[in-house]
Length: 60
Image 1: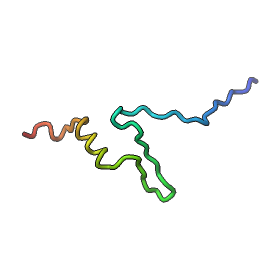
Image 2: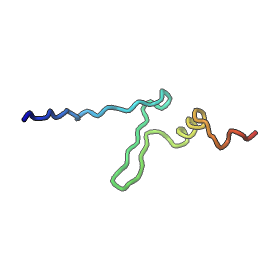
Image 3: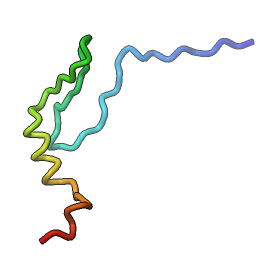
């Protein structure tokens, strides 16, 4: 039988992100705490600007 080739996965691919969030990274430490490279307020501003909230569409 032919042996299967093992792919080299030593360099993981970086995910595609929006140009405004370039450099954004999330890691979970050994205590289960989430560590982000961006401030949560900066992320919330981005989401408020770019994501449509279905619950707030009909409010005026």
